[in-house]
Length: 267
Image (cartoon, rainbow, N blue to C red; front, top):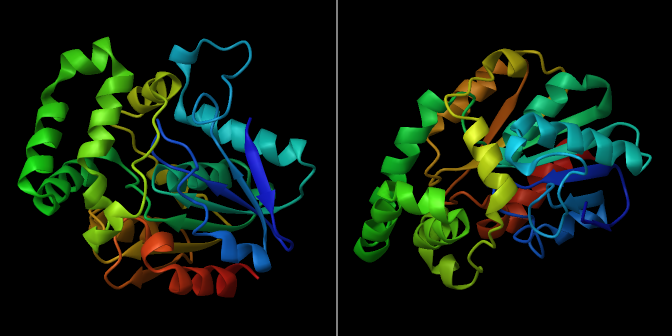
């Protein structure tokens, strides 16, 4: 498993989202956290620069494998309790990790998390994304969503087109899209994980979280606020902080505010 480590302070593992993506968009934007935290940033197995899980058929990979890999990384690095900061789908991985391994988690931060259940967030997210895109990108995203043959025949190309077409939608201020590279895609394992979560519902797991929890979301995120508020209400004592004007990447668009929130919560 590929990982980077920088800084000093309480150990804090950053969990990327996207299923088929990697951790490359965290840096350099989260680097200021390293002044006060020991940051561990990694690529999930079979994604980015990490290899496949040894002895496993990649087509059988599930979201819970990603949860188990997070615990294995903690143990291999010889860490005790850690802070977990999960972005997007990584927020759900972090939540499931905190639910299953409460003794491993000091604090949990869910950044722009997807919903606790598929039904409440997926369709509104697609609608919000389409509405936020210029006509050319909107038409391309619509074509990609409908091209099931391409998804089956060449998932790598499918997801490259998918994430390229929606790149502008990640940002409240869409001028950021020209400054931030389009996501890198490695689709084989990620596709299996993606398909493993159809119609998922993790509300019961989130109710069992005992770690201190902070949720951070931009007010212009295409993820519907209603689904984020549901997560807040499921996790005992969870706190929700909204960052005005930011989209799905508040640590990029509102870096100083994001760093202040996390350090105030984690240190």
